[in-house]
Structure formats: structure tokens, C-alpha cells
Length: 81
Image 1 (spheres, helix red, strand yellow):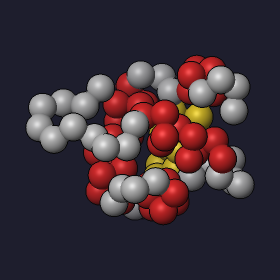
Image 2 (cartoon, rainbow, N blue to C red):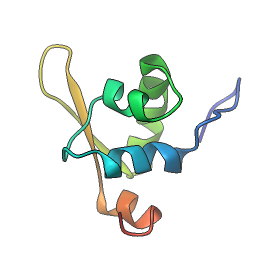
Image 3 (cartoon, rainbow, N blue to C red):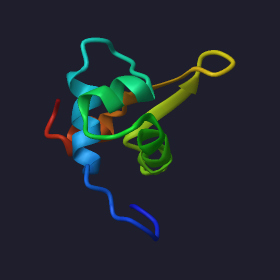
């Protein structure tokens, strides 16, 4: 679901898997970035597409804090993680 420009080297499924395998039920962009080969900015650019596709839920939990978690559809895409 990447737009024009450089194609992502990290797949959507790799991002989803990083969320699924995290020990906490919710994760931040920096926690995702630390588990995949991406910067925080790169993760933040990719997350809106995953949210729009119904694979991830996004919630603001503070003035500058955002957390994510997998939807059932996201879990199904990974084969039930």
C-alpha cells in the first residue's frame, strides 16, 4: 500500500509480526522500529495505511503518545498470531 516514491524494504507483514510478537498488548512506533529495520519516522509513515486497511488500531494516549495493536483481521493476515 505504499504510495509513490521509494518502495519499502520492510513488508507490512513484518511490521504486523513485530506488533504481534511484542510482549505488551499495545506498542508504540519506536517499539516497532526497534524490532524491524526502520526508523521511527518510517514506521509512522507506514502505520496510516495499516490502520486504513483495518489491520491495526491506532489510539492517541497523550499529547504526543500513540499506541497500536492488531485487529482480528491483522491477526488473520499473519495466520493467527
